[in-house]
Length: 92
Ligand SMILES: Cc1cc2nc3c(=O)[nH]c(=O)nc-3n(C[C@H](O)[C@H](O)[C@H](O)COP(=O)(O)OP(=O)(O)OC[C@H]3O[C@@H](n4cnc5c(N)ncnc54)[C@H](O)[C@@H]3O)c2cc1C
Image (cartoon, rainbow, N blue to C red; front, side, top):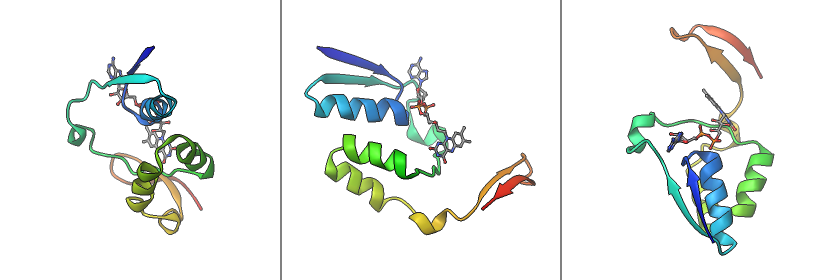
């Protein structure tokens, strides 16, 4: 069986990794041709997200994720700002 995943976001890539590790052939299609075009993200991954990724990624990939993360101490406050970076909502 071959599975085609449309979209290389967090969900698509995690699914592809899980299927691949389960022995299923996977191909991922992504419409954005350049990673740089997205501008990148700074995502906070809570313990549930990390547990899923730890379960489904190869250990080396999960270690790479941890190594490239800013760590727990970087997430001290949740805030939403408008287009001029004026604070709309913030909580600790
Ligand atoms: C501003 C913002 C901040 C966020 N912060 C957090 C956070 O801190 N922590 C957190 O856990 N979540 C956060 N989220 C939510 C998180 O981004 C989403 O839950 C997550 O990205 C969903 O993953 P996904 O793979 O389902 O979709 P996406 O990440 O949206 O990925 C979908 C992918 O599919 C591609 N695609 C779409 N249509 C096609 C097509 N027809 N053909 C090929 N490719 C296609 C898109 O280009 C995209 O790369 C945030 C969201 C936003 C908008």
